[in-house]
Length: 203
Length: 300
Image 1 (cartoon, one colour):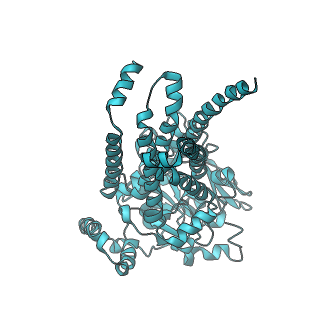
Image 2 (cartoon, each protein chain N blue to C red; image 1 turned 90 degrees about the vertical axis):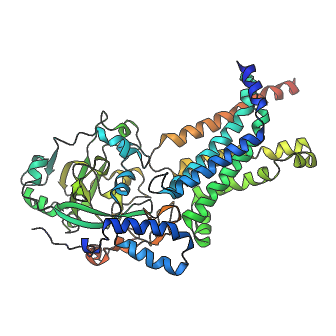
Image 3 (cartoon, helix red, strand yellow; image 1 turned 45 degrees about the horizontal axis):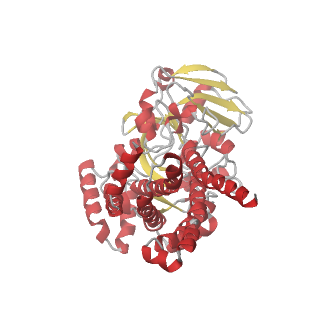
């Protein structure tokens, strides 16, 4: 079953994902502009883009554990997943800044004064170098080791993104906490692996 | 003793629905081309327009039916609103369980077109139907010494999927100072647009306090208690730093997590401009005297 899946995954090139992702983002915008997202489309679009971005980041973080534990190989999609996540974060940010907050002074005030905005902004900034270096040229230029190190920035970005969501919820809400728990679990799989290696080197 | 308050917004201000829908379409179509100069005028015109039935009934905060804005419209049909009764107790001359019909008997139901400002910085204009809470208080007889009115929403896990999750300490409770409760603006609403109030908007009977953030206007009321102590208020209890007992609309006192200086009127679509929030939600003239001498930044 896994082997068939892996074969199918290999047959679908990354650019298909880019087209599907971009089309979905544009479709949501169209829905928002034409009443398809309810009577408050600004908030709806902002939240949808943010949630999709976060889900894509989690899928990206799941690639390694899925391969190690289930043998499911999504590696050939990982760059597309990451770049799409970045674009949905960018879209989330732009809807917030341009359509929601609407003025530079208020954008600054929010970033400086509202901790959940500050945290979201930090996550966005952490993802910018990853978006910029998501190409073969950058991998060659930086060297694979340095590139991989840089892209570990996705770990803090994911945690900040989760906290950003938990923090903006009113009252005790389950959904953002579930996402935070998934994020921490996916990150924990990395640190669990690191331990035996350390033990070996000591031995 | 009705009609102590006359809204400046009346049905004469309301654009006939077909013209109004037409204009919305035109505005939506040309919105992107409009210059900044026109936007002010547009905002002013919108000020007098009640939101549509669809807007008022599909975008709700009623956490007993879920925390999503569309959850109440989807889930609230399960609420049994008939029969309905309200327990009125505490410092009153005639305590007891009053059926909805008993309460409505002899009440003058009026149309009141009020601004509605949510603490989340969105707003609507809603044509409520209801009676003044003062009339009900007079009927049950408020005893000397009573200083506050406490309210409680129904708490029915079998009908309200949201109360199975401890988003708040259920049942939802709110309170007013007695003079706020007796103010002629304070309404017990039973309808919108002349129709029975839909479940997602707090059927069959809810409070409307238009100069306070929306969460003070408690829905689907099952208990009213007169008391001499400041009553438990759900959001205040959940986070006192963010939600004060008074929670009067005030553009100068921000919510710790967001600005209250401006708001977004629902219905403007994807390119709606923010509008400045008005002191006491535009009811300063009517209610400012209630808070004379009070520090509104400390008593937010």
